[in-house]
Length: 190
Image (cartoon, rainbow, N blue to C red; front, side, top):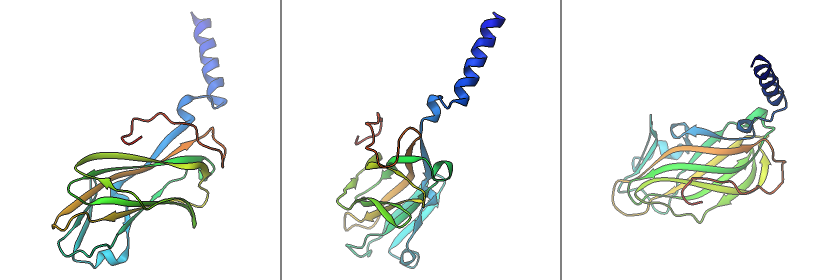
């Protein structure tokens, strides 16, 4: 029994040294919703209320908020291993309360736009997780930013949305520029 334990211990040690651990092959990295930064003009606008709390960043459009103005919330996602590991997906977790919705998303590596979609209508009542395939694998060596555009859907006061978390999927086995493999996901909308 001692020999078997010793052999298993050596095999485990070798697999850890070789990086063969399945848990180390890929991972989601998340930023809490309350970490979002927003444009300066929002601070001074009495017709929108934005406030972080322990459950996310809560945004409420008030009655006189101008349409079609779209405030943008910015999230910096920490890069893995000093920006040397590739990512191929991003995800937004949010809760809709009324007719406010996410109308666009931009993903950048420093100043380079990696992914852009301004034809979104993500929202409604309830909890949502929406992931986006970036179309290629990117090493975010200049900083990963996810910019989320919000739009007021109705004309009533109180259109609300809460951003709970924003994340990126990093994969240790992918090379920059490659097409991402299909990722099994439990996320809504996939």
